[in-house]
Structure formats: C-alpha cells, structure tokens
Amino acid sequence: SIASTITGAGLVSPGNSPGILTATATDPSGGLDYAFEFTATGGPDYTDAGASINDVLRLTHASDPFSGGTFTAGNTIDIYLAVSGVAMHDEFRGGFFTDRDSDFLATVADADFQFWILGDGAGNDATFNSQGFYSLADYTGSSILVGTSQVATANFAGGPINNGWVMQFTVVPEPETFVLGVFGALAITVLVWRRKKNPPAAG
Image (cartoon, rainbow, N blue to C red; front, side):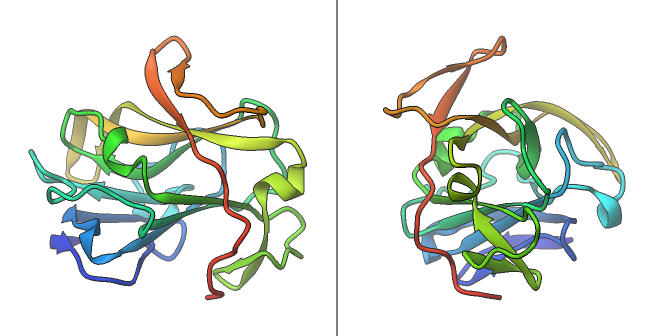
C-alpha cells in the first residue's frame, strides 16, 4: 500500500504477482508503464492481497485517481495471461480498480496495450516473472482481447467498496476491422485494442 500518487517513469506491477497494490492515484504523464498478470478467469479475490488470483492496482482517490493525466501511446500496459489456453468469451477481471464511481475507460484507452499468454511456458515473445510468454494472437491464431471497464463491488481488507470500477478483458475472435461498439447487456463502451508485435524488454 502506498499512501501517495505513483508518478515518474518505470514499470508498475502489483504485488509478487499476482497481487493487489493500493495507492492514492497514479499519474501516467511521466511515461509510466504497467504490467498486470491474470492467472484465472473471473474476478480477483479482493480480500486477500497475497492470493488475489489476478493483479489489481487499486486507486483510492475520490475524484482524480489518474491525477488528471490521460494515457498515451507512451504508456505501455502489458496484460499477461498466465494460463495454458483460452476459450472464446473467457473473461478476466483485474488491472486498474478505482474506488471512484466513474467509468475510467476513456482515460486509459489510448495506451499501448500488449497481450501475452503463458501457454506451455516456452514462449520467447516476452518474459515476465522469469516465465516465457507468447503473443496472444500469434499463439491462438485467431483471437484478441476486448477491453472494457465495469461497475464492481469489492471487499478489500478495510471493508467493502460499492460502485467502484474495474477493467475486464474478454477473448473474442479477431475481426477484420476494428470498431467502437457496445459490449453485452451492461451496454459498456468497448474499445478493441490491437496487440503489438514488438515484445517488451525482458525482466
């Protein structure tokens, strides 16, 4: 837990992955990058930071969890699926979580999202936590992740947060064209993020 704003440059990755890192806010304007590991479908265990299943960066500021900054292509957000495989419509929840009851999708949408999958652990497209990952699209051959944000209730160690917001990534077939649309019954605005071919630096 950090009782201040995460700022500057470098890589932010919650916990001894996966884990939960709590901070007042984060400011992406200095070129911060972020890495989130997801080890199971569904949502994280918010009550246990040491066994959360999926990474969470919880931002507690009531009005400005991203310190007024909007993410750009200079901010890389790596999503590591530490699973052997995925099926269409699998959902992974975690990543950014804001206590503020407000959709933050537009704030992070322009970041450089990159997606990776562990598979058999022999991938050489990216290295994270000393494990080899494959590019998701190259490994599956036909799928991508669709990113959304959604309302969530989370019971952290200090008590429940009602009407917070969390990221969700859903596996879908890779379309020939990328569109802005509406996802599911919740009618949340969807942004489809194309993965990049260039892997991040190992480490």
